[in-house]
Image 1 (cartoon, rainbow, N blue to C red):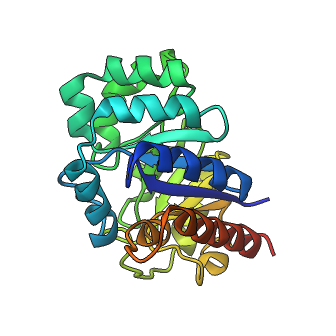
Image 2: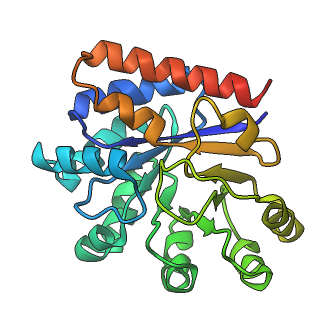
Length: 246
């Protein structure tokens, strides 16, 4: 069965909402939760996720919020912290590792940490029983792909196009998918621009999809209350999971 990874922005609109939404996503068939760490300059993300990041920060988000809600979320759904390297560096990777282990979080997704730089931190993360998710982009050479995916853990994150999340671009990924599978048996998931309408097509040659902006758009809708937002996001998640496996 193909997997669904859902990204949501931590603590927006508040901590309790994030916890309730995570539980609902688990019940809706989501396999992994990317819990986004709000940051002022999310360079890989489009305007939708950027807006949610900024609103969370304006609401007073602190890293202690991430750590606290993860203790409620990680026991019910496999959770990864998705954030930019600045907070990890500023607070210290050891602190993130300690908090992740105590809450049951599986590892980290750090989109602005290239593979070569991540290699410095990889041994420390793995010694703690956690994982750093590896990215492969359409611009990567076969030689670099082999290096990146040879020891990848949990899943490989295939970036669907060069650009930012949510922009809906499209590239022919057949060759790069073949190259990745040539060198790794680790599940391959595709992200960037995946939505309810195109998820089935995007998932065709891979093991799962990663969806973010489609969910965060609902978080930002001011005409919906908390319950309506959770119900709407849960419905989208159920539809995507059904679509990619039909």
